[in-house]
Length: 196
Image (cartoon, rainbow, N blue to C red; front, side, top):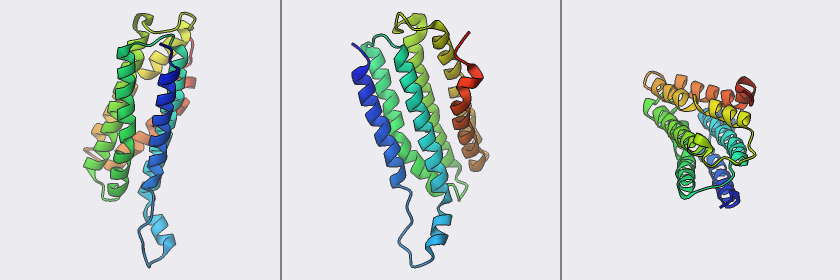
């Protein structure tokens, strides 16, 4: 089986998850100052930006991964389904952290990070299942590219796990780390490269 149906389904889930993020960025009905309310909901903007950027990075990387895949099997398809289930859960944890970040809620920041950590683990499982012994890798895929992808995936779960644990000390610190990880993955191709 080729990856075309898998990619189409995945793109649909990414698009819906990214779109749902904005639905919770709103101001309550108020007779007060709209400008004050727009400033007061800054955690919603921050959580939206981090989550949208993270989903966007995942979508870009998913495309890169799929260009290396030559065939799929049932296990790979189910790993992708589980991964997408976790991606689709992210609007909920985004809403929770947006609503409770100003209170410094450790639980909200931890839940947000746990979602990202599990997402990272599922993504790594998907990739390493395909890449181990080139199980599902296309015959013409450049091994330098495959190795570069593996290097870029390797630290993700650990970084998200550490950022999630930091929520136990400070919600603000953990959210700052989630943003830093998103920035890291925007820049990771220049850090790890795609050769060697």
